[in-house]
Image (cartoon, rainbow, N blue to C red; front, side):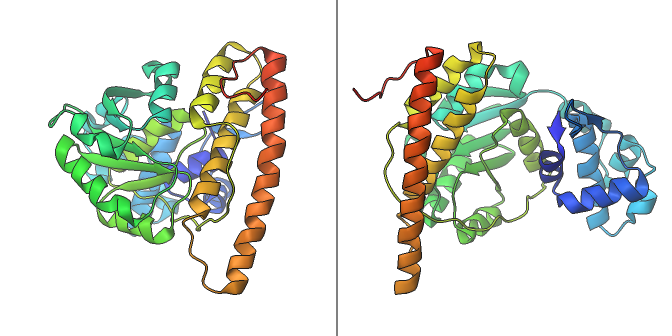
Length: 308
């Protein structure tokens, strides 16, 4: 189940638009969580995506709102076979290290992703089979710049898939535009990996996500990503999900720091601002790393990179 923000993002809608549609046209029968938050099923997200595509083509939402999913698919020219295939696991080739491990830990049934082959980075793309029976190539990199463009194109040519999904934590808007010009779906690494299958299906259907605003910052970190993934995977046996969420936050901060080192300053004032952001992110990193160490010790989780 997806909360309102995730459902809107996956359908390519602004959250405000989704709320207006629901208020005016009684668009969905979303469930409610114990805290009263709206929850959407994958089926509902798929229907919202169909509505978005048809509205973009000029159809009135007031007319579309009363139609079934089958009728919406018919208007878009989607066959029943495509509908059936959308419920099957997405066959994927993975170029990633941490994400592949997380998917393996969760299992195909939980994520909806069937990993057919994988390698750790774009530099190792020659290790992949030259042709595969996969649907999607998934590339995950924490920070992206325009130097990645020819390597993504080469990887796509090697594996011959129907779509490419590029996942990042920080990336300049110009690089996102360039990747989209190559036909890639580009998105931030989702916190909930059950969203990944929906992103892959969006890529296969030719949808695109809104362009995010660029980010910036600085400073090194204490835990490397392998350590954080080890902690996150080990925490699966706990009722408390805090170690996994805190691992995600620390990976985000580490990625943000490395990305900021590549960000050019336009003038002295801009450089001073980036230095301030670097100090602030460093202070946040120290606080969160201290919290992670205490949490891991309290829960008995492994700390391969723990300081004496």
